[in-house]
Image (cartoon, rainbow, N blue to C red; front, side, top):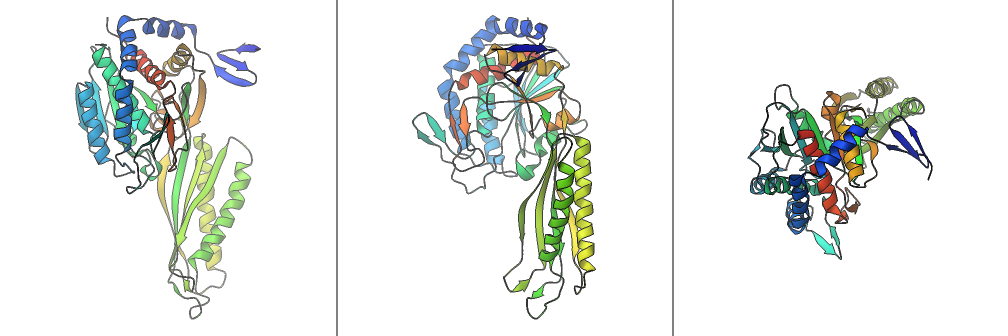
Length: 422
């Protein structure tokens, strides 16, 4: 195998594999050899059956965005039973457990989100086939919640004392129209002191998501008088205006995204109208635009707004009776940004991945970490481990393939950030 070292990146068969600085490698090895940490690792192994039961219990509590309260109450009681020093639910519904440190100052957060993408009436009963668990939300992100509970248990039972306070968080509103409302609330000015943020969300061990994929989302609403398809023929039709707007936007957005840093756009949902023989009084569509570049995101946002208004104006001037009104409602806003590879949190995450023989990989994604990243606060998202698939579908599955190692990884990284008291 040919490996070429360039700064702190290895290239293995064309794939970039980040490498940590030697000081962080030494730090993690030394921390992993501490007696209390080894004991915590052993406890993670010992409680695997408990962790599996916690995963099933939480999965079978529906938690669509804006309706996470029942799951939140259960997660709160689990954190209390696991040994957190103090647990509470904040004004917006986030569950927060505190592990008090021995020194004032830095605060480290370990997060997983409470919500799933599935409606409240979805059957979330966990079914087991062989060694695989099947249920909507079993992986994304209920496994992350179970990992947090196991981490708290291990720290408590092993009597690990940290220098910094640790906040164990079950956050609301990560998915879809939840629009990161839980983490946005936590980082409101003067709300919660958090100096380092680690989210658990997404696949394999070794994932170090240090770049936030920004997005902006709109619901475009086209409204008119509406009427009979024959009797009111010629009246301004919201569907026709919507179609013209899609054509206008797609033309200019396609040209913009054909070059430069990757930027995307998508019209995901369209609705409106009452019957086939009625001119609708309202049409609407939901639009998603994404980019890792904050400037590119602003630019495609502008292209969208200009295209919508231009198309509606031209349609209204085309000779139709009356006119169409346009309302653009912002339904999502996730900022972009990046925690540099040189940052201590990223370096530790890479070193911890190596420690557990998990090939580290820097990734880009849209997660709770977007918010602190955009504010310049060190933040990453790590994987939940095991094997899984079909996320966001009714056939979602997760298999405990070496899952305990992912918990140990999250534990060691959190302890490295928080520091161990002597």
